[in-house]
Image (tube, rainbow over all chains, first blue to last red; front, side, top):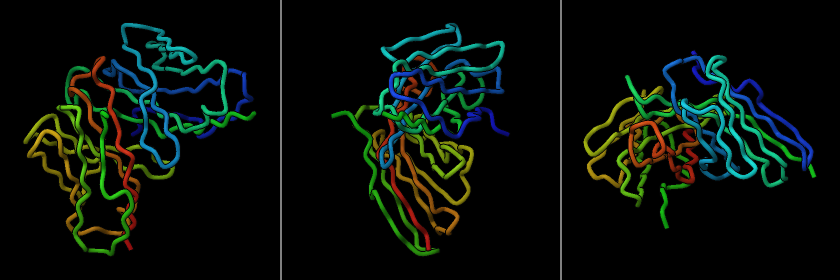
Length: 115
Length: 116
């Protein structure tokens, strides 16, 4: 059963507008969440993360929001740029218990930013 | 330059012919991991290692072996490859296996494997 879900396989946005990528998780033991970005023919690269003790983390144009009660997080990109076109993976991990530190990835959302 | 390297980047082989994909990191990271990426399935963990001589199965370990004899290297071994192991493979490393600030994993460039 999928523990981390990205229900939108793709998203298309106009340059300059906001991109919102969503992620849901089922395991309440997860306490650290990350977003990775992946270009074709390259490995994923870390983008931004958030601990469960926070509900928001911002880094430049990228902001991640965490709603623990809903087990939902989202990545906002403002303003979107054509260079942001990539596949975005949401990942989750747990500090305690089995498999601590391992990342569980969603299936990814392909973002296309049109000029 | 801090990086994770994988070799080979591309490999076409035949069923049953043993192969090894190497992975090396120069960041003195304790934690290393192997993933495979398949269309519609995202990244799935094969094996991981929390430190030298400590390895454990991920979500899809069948048909794979790993070893961690040195901190910097974590090779992935396919003793008898089959066509269902055709995939894009990524090695990753992080400073520690503990979740938290240091848990960001650095990924290699990927190895595209085709098993005929």
